[in-house]
Each structure stands twice: as structure tokens, then as C-alpha cells.
Image (cartoon, rainbow, N blue to C red; front, side, top):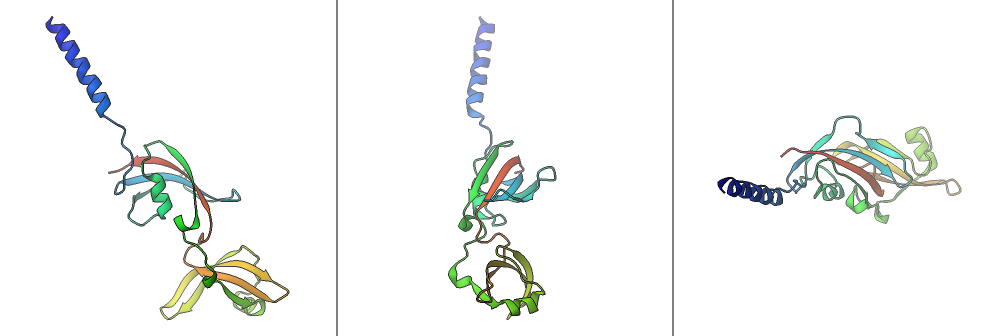
Length: 173
């Protein structure tokens, strides 16, 4: 009888603990490591660390774009998720008030070449704060008017919809 009681209690303990032990999911404030692949809407892969070392970061600390942080929350180790982020969830919108124009001749003098629509160039600009590196996104080259429309941004992928495929490697703490 005693053996049966011990077996029942042991079985009850196993059942109870199985229901109480849930697989850990990512929460804001957790340090995690992930593998990711970043693609644009045309399917071109822009960045990836798959096959390399995972990146580690604290979820919600501002190091990653808000949409990436939000996508990782709730993931379990080994899980893979694909998310498409709008510009506002990623590196920011491009608004009309950001658009600048320059003549093709002036741009040719500054760069030595005339870029094409959609090109993104890393340039050095001078401001009141001194010299800084920025991305020049070419929006339109109007050869008829002799004008190039562009924006200067701090992020290469500003204004872009981005697709991330994320695999959670580990929850560090």
C-alpha cells in the first residue's frame, strides 16, 4: 500500500510540475542573441549574420529598431519568425520636408559622378556641429530639368519597408 501511495504522489508531483514549467519566452529587458536576415521588398538580402556569430542585445534598450524589438518579444529559443516592418517601425519615414534638390552639374562637381534613382551614397556633410557622415538617398534624377531630388538621413534604410527573418539563439538573462 505504501508503495502505491508513493507512486501516486510521485506521479502527482510529475504532473503538477509539468504543468507549471513553461518554456521561457522573451520579455522586454531580457538579453538575447539572435540570427537574422534583412531583405528589402524586392527580395534582395541586404544583411545577414546566419552562419556567423549571433548578435546580442537587451530587448527594449533602444539598440534595435522598435519593430525588431517587438518581433522578438514572446519568441522561444530555436523559434524563427519572419516580420515585415514599416519605415516607422524601422529607420523612420521620409517626409516631403526632408527632400532637397541640387542641380546635376552641382552634384557632379561634388561627387564626380551622377547617381541613379534609388542609389544610396555615404557622404560627408558639414553642419553647425561639424562634419558628419550621412546617407544620401537619391529619389529622382530629372535630366530634363537638370535637377536631382534626394534626402540626407542617418540611416541607410530610412523610408524602406524591411523584412527580417529572425531566429532566437538564446535568452542570456
